[in-house]
Image (cartoon, rainbow, N blue to C red):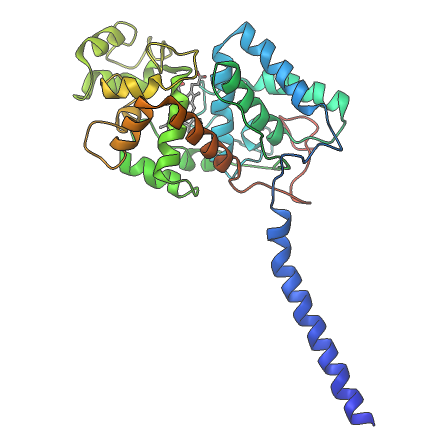
Length: 329
Ligand code: HEM
């Protein structure tokens, strides 16, 4: 009788070990899911608080809708959408804010701080800074006339980040179409997502330092447009570096498909913008489609924003719910 009992015991132990391995393999996939109803039980007023914070910020300065949208993009492209872009430098952390693409350029941090205080007054310690930024970016787009959509939520906040990660993950305005395509592909976004997301440049502004080389050196630019931009942006770096020009020359506080129509006339402000049309590259036809069909752009922009918002979120028990968006708890 002893032998069969021994065999049975070993088989049971092996079965348990196999089941534990299978469960461990399945677990990460099961918790990594964001959900549009994530806070419906724990913070039902989240959406209305963010909406009212963004409404007053955009009323005070329409460009703020653009600035918050860009903050979300820069958050998601660096270690995923984990609120890392919001961390201030400190004695123990050199973060993203002073990286090349962000220094003297990213803005809107205080708008997120103000919304976070109001969210925490209603639902203490419940909502991540990363999720507040995702909802605020959606509202910025919608308040400037763009689409709205349900934002998948449940992200948690990073405890740390590095300046180097921001320097290496954010695309430069001197990028070619091929570089833009591969930069977005490395985040799981295809060419169509890349062209649709670039339509964010239908709102907001850029500094002369970002478009100087385009208006003085590029040949695929409308001549009258280049002349006008040279009046605000001198040929040498220096006094005019911080002067601003609208990314969409005709409607920079209106979220529409004007960005793509500009590209057809060689009115792209950044070199990287004009790369999306005119050199016979692989994405010319997508730009043409969005220029002619605002509805197609809008629908694809929403799809791509949701995909971008899904880049490597921290979920479950990873990361934390920060008390102050500027520092780890
Ligand atoms: C395709 C690659 C991209 C490049 C190379 C790029 C580059 C830039 C640059 C250089 C500026 C001006 C910064 C300055 O001069 O201070 C800018 C502004 C902006 N970017 Fe992008 N960007 C890209 C994609 C995106 C995406 C995917 C989004 C959002 C979905 C976005 C949203 C914005 C917005 C809204 C502004 C204006 C911000 C403001 O007025 O405060 N960009 N971008």
